[in-house]
Image (cartoon, rainbow, N blue to C red; front, side, top):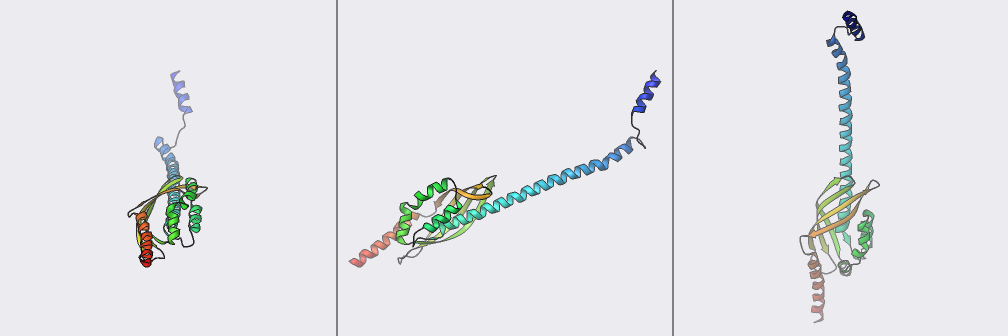
Amino acid sequence: MSAVTDDATTAAEPRWPGGSDRRRTALLPWALALIAVVVATFSTIQWRSAVSEDEARQDALEVAGTFVDALTTWDATGGLDATRERIASLGTGPLLDELETFFSGPDILQLVALQARSEGTIDSIAVEVDGETAVAFAEAQMQISDTSDAPPSTIRQQIRLELLREDGTWRVARFETAVYDDAVAVLGDRSGAGSGDEEGGDS
């Protein structure tokens, strides 16, 4: 009985020519091919992800740079409506809600009254992207002049932008500025200098 059982068991097992070593040898190319496919697929996914992230960063950086340029380069001789429209075209959400208040504020009205002009220079700018949001940091200078004989005033500032990607396009949701110099005092000095000249002329 035991002989029959051994024969049946032996008959049920596949027999590979050359024994078990030949079986492993036959399976090895298929295993290597499968590993190669997996590695290639993973590498392709990683490469595409890196390219996508780099493109997103470049797109966000371009929008941030254009926005900072709009903030720092303007001409208030005929008003600042064009600057407001340019900024609005790059903004979204909270920023759009605040633009009307910002451009009707006393600082803006003073710039228009002085017929001030600004030439902006971006010293540095960087952006960090996290999915559909990004944060940009910039340092810029503004050379502000007006119709008076006062020499141009230089204002250096840091600008922080928060961006959102909407339908594939980056837009600025809000921004903050920190000036190295007292911009309000600079503008006040220019206004005061103009008034002083007029008073001196009357006397």
